[in-house]
Length: 135
Length: 131
Image 1 (spheres, rainbow over the protein chains, first blue to last red):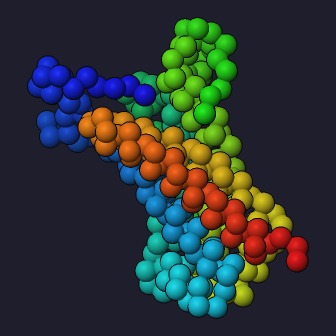
Image 2: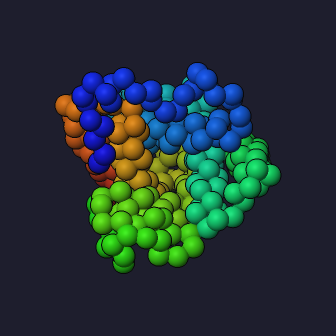
């Protein structure tokens, strides 16, 4: 754990990232989206854990948590969790490729950023369509 | 959470994280190792999680009650929350600059992630374990 020193000098230094002065570009947006989907999945897993516990206990406990998995809010929530899994997964694949020194040029990293964005939405749609057809 | 590192400092090979004898290297390496496991677990889990939407109690129990989905979702919950704990530690260390608050947030994260994983495992075992 890196501790930022808290004396006067450290407090006066500007902190990176300078979100307000950077021009928003896709690779930066996908970096932020990776962190947001990661944090979102933390909350999503907590909600799903409650949903599963409710299903395990049954009766009134399931009625109390069924909003997480059904109805407009539940369907939207589940769809967002599935999208977040795919987006974060593809973002991780992107990092794994970069770890190996691949796709690090301007063209490559732009391609990966686009692939993460489009791929996450596409995979979610694909699974949704297959699931609807199967159900 | 520590993973033994081969070098005191340096890169062990293409695709490996920069390794040193400080705590950051095991952290980075552990994030990578768990993320590899989470690729297949995540795809399969996303499929079954989407299957839960709109289901009745019996439907949810039937979906989770099958052995293969139960085992995969179990592993996804445990490995996922280990990965999530470390990821949340990164976020806390990046944005919480007050020393005391940071320490408290990290302890809260440790126990919250463990609680989520424990509830997840307990719930799936209650549904899927042979009676």
